[in-house]
Length: 245
Ligand code: PGA
Image 1 (cartoon, rainbow, N blue to C red):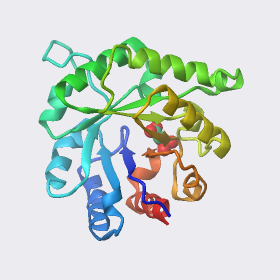
Image 2 (tube, helix red, strand yellow; image 1 turned 30 degrees about the horizontal axis):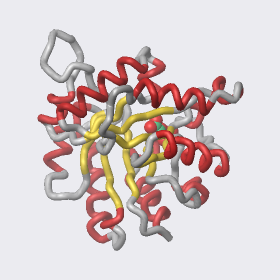
Image 3 (cartoon, helix red, strand yellow; image 1 turned 180 degrees about the vertical axis):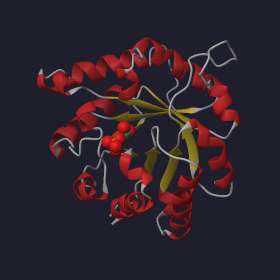
Image 4 (cartoon, rainbow, N blue to C red; image 1 turned 90 degrees about the vertical axis):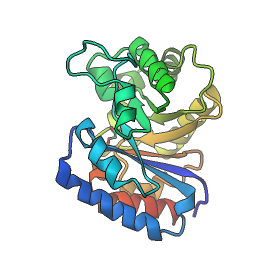
């Protein structure tokens, strides 16, 4: 049983159409009647196409919306296919995920991530900053040095970190069904908390209602970034319920 303020962030990745928004309605209904609702923040990060319709739907709820990435420039520009933080804010986003390993893998560098974070903060968005090591880096026992580097370069010259939430997502946990050993995870969260003081630190990677029975015993986690399971309202609600049970 926890009374700690927790974040539950749904990362829908490249999934979802207008009809998928019905599943969010179920979560809104659940939240209204959930006794612990003062202790939590839900943030939906749908694909960009759904931000506006979802923001209309969630207008009267306490659920916020985030985007999954943004361009590094906050002003308009000739960048075909890109969207900047201002445009995301304009249609209802309050948060943006930056540095997700799927984008790092596609070529996003620490330098780009740093620029994106700065520009999104300037626009007034809050940041969900993802860090995490690959299996190769973990096997070589480089986890801490990789995370340190991602934090140092990603947050370079950013003094005020009050609008930054960090999501620790080991790349080998994302979409694999595998989660870190609890002891290891607790130590890594502690390590990150010491590096970046006063930031909330979430865990992400294969979070589901089953493994939540274990994850919820890690006291220093401030919430979860949920991919696959967040598209299923029942699973997402179960994750929330179990956290407080
Ligand atoms: P997953 O994704 O929960 O499907 O592993 C998490 C993420 O990529 O944010």
